[in-house]
Amino acid sequence: MEVLPKRTLRDVTPFFPEQPNEQIRRELGLKEIVRLCSNESPLGPSPKALAAYRAAADSLCRYPDGGSPGLCAGLARHHKLSPENILVGSGSDELIRMVCEAFLDPEDEVIVSQHGFVRFRQQAAMTGTRIIEIPMSDWTHDLETMGRAANPRTKILFVANPNNPTGTYSTASELRDFLQAVPATALVVMDEAFHDFAVKNDDYPVTVPGLVRKHPNLLVLRTFSQAYGLAGLRVGYAAGDPEVLGWLDRIRLPFNVNLPAQRACLAALADRAFLARSVAATIKNRERLAANLREMGFGVLDSATNFLFVHSRIRGRALSRALFKRGIVIHPLDEYGLADHVRISVGTPEQNASLLKALKAIAPEGA
Ligand SMILES: Cc1ncc(COP(=O)(O)O)c(C=O)c1O
Image (cartoon, rainbow, N blue to C red; front, side, top):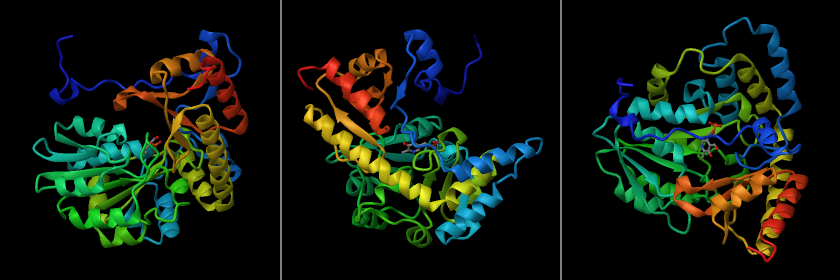
């Protein structure tokens, strides 16, 4: 083909999702597949969200409300902000793309962390902007060095808090100093996809609404994909300054979030009891799984999320392949430059038991 894409796209590798369950079943002839690869909640969504989703079926001949005004209003109430402080996206993935598209020129710089969430770098790369990578400190974003690296050319600093894939978080005081250090001309994107798990830690920063009101250059991202158990609907949102969100809104596709998704997320937001139960169960299962893996000799970092960052003697890709053959899907981390690590989502107690049994078969003498 002689038609070339734009220059900045030529080095971008496509996203390779894990194989769908149906394909794995066919390939391996297995009935049961245990997916511990994408940090989805095995506990599923609130029954109230499901009811709202099903009720929306009656309106499928209609376009959804563009801009998700009902969900924006609900989120604004929930966060004690005004609806102008909220923008809803098709997953926080879409919001990361929108921020890059709306704010980055090729002559700008973006600051990311060495093993920070990979999407930041991928999306920024498509704009041709210069990407500065700051090494981690103890598997955590080094906010002090990131803040010091910011200069008048810096347009965005991306922080995943907690971070995927390390599961670590930066504390309230680290964030406070960082926000002081970053120039007002640079946007700080705090991606809090795993907020509902991390907030159980006393020193985890409270960004919404206080810090969002105080720092117009702070943009916080949240998602319904993890704790709310609604990854399949693709809904995330940004909380930030109305002017910043106004620029993102200009490039938002008119109907970016579908109608059942808007309704289901609004219902999920209101079901605080379900969310609390789901988060508590995940944390309990996570701690038990971490202890079991450590007993087997794996190196497991403390996690503030719904997944574990695991170091193994067996290379990550080989370990993932061996588990895959037994119908268990985990996530190797070569794309993060972490070939000796894997990321394992916390499953139900039964799923975690299947994982441990398979690991014992693969590495009988321990990890
Ligand atoms: C840190 C982080 N941000 C954003 C996302 C994307 O979430 P969404 O499903 O809302 O697009 C993920 C997905 O795992 C994530 O780990």
